[in-house]
Amino acid sequence: MFAVPDNTVVIAENRAALRHPVRVALEYAAARDRWRHLLRYDPDHRFSTKIAGDAAEEVWLMGWLPGQQADLHDHAQSSGAFTIVSGRLAETVARPGLTELHALNAGQSRVFGPGYVHQVRNDGPDPAISIHVYRAGGRAMRPYHLDPVSGPVRD
Ligand SMILES: [Fe+2]
Image (tube, rainbow, N blue to C red; front, side, top):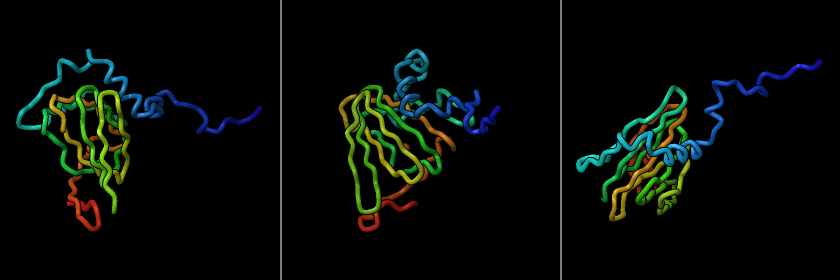
């Protein structure tokens, strides 16, 4: 006989948390029947709605008209991922002393975690759709501004 340490056993309710958030986002992106009836494009505000979720994970659908954006922000203690379903989005990631620009097309994904500060914008000519997965804290958003010397600063 030998003892099996508790942390080697996968407990059923923890299985969802073991799936990579990009995989979750891609599965929702492919399952359009789960959210197509919820999708809107709002000319006044970037559209977003929660399409699934529990205490451990939230999945959000977003609709971006050309020119709409999410201003510079982080997601507090949340981690997760987002994937582009259609259209294209430009993501600017701000770090101290460094700004990265990512041009994201349908099928591409990005991951994030605590300390990840970014701005996302539809720079394309067509509407865009994206799916976002947030873990351990839900869809918290904290605003930042970009200081030319020190980089991202929380507002
Ligand atoms: Fe974000």
